[in-house]
Image (cartoon, rainbow, N blue to C red; front, top):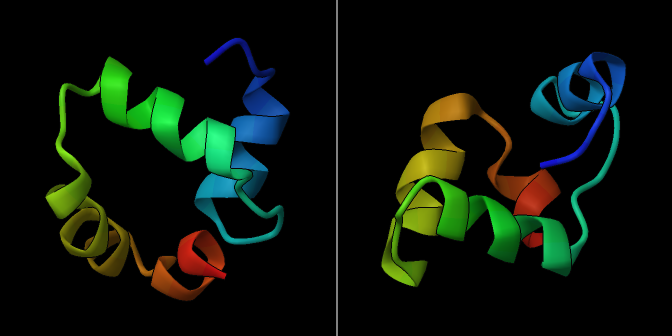
Length: 52
């Protein structure tokens, strides 16, 4: 993603919001589909952060 470990930790712990471009990049890197977003986000507990 090109982030520092600190930024990644903040984003994964819901302390820093995700931008739309970040979400799109993560989907591509993880080889997910748009339909996977709610499932993945709910599992890590950041659905509200990612969907804003």
